[in-house]
Length: 199
Image 1 (cartoon, rainbow, N blue to C red):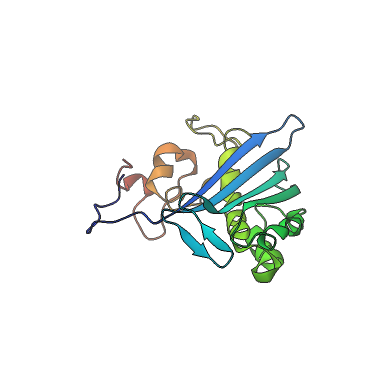
Image 2 (image 1 turned 90 degrees about the horizontal axis):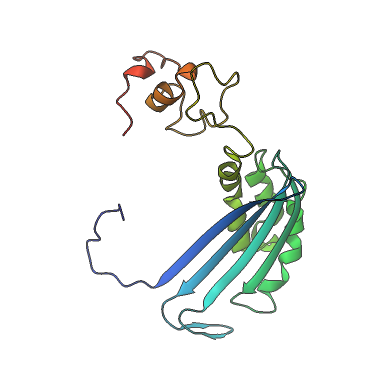
């Protein structure tokens, strides 16, 4: 663990886990299976009854199927464990509203428009919010070439990941070191090659 040492003794009370697995399908599409759980360390009294320690308050699944351009062609949800059985677990069909969206073109905005508040499940919608970056990681070097380790004369087009985060800004040290063909000078500052080395 790389975080600082806690300043006080602590007792674990709650764990939220999010897991996303990406599958390349034989038909050329991709499935993103997303799973979220909330588990308490102690027995929890809910309006619907007692939930014993270790049993999930939430155990929710969301699968979207995308094409190679990240268009959503199918979506399904399942609520295996919820705090209000018979009520929370009736929202799954609403997630068909994701079909037709593109994970890279206004997805989060459209998601909130279609499934925010009473139109969806807070937890399933929150889970859907992380799908764009998960899909990018899945597609990197499998669907989209990242050109990591490529020689200076390759690629002919800018790698998709450049200028998408602070480390891979084209006027920064990482691009100067690993993608020198695409390095640019900072306006009014020293060239990117003079940035401190990346360790």
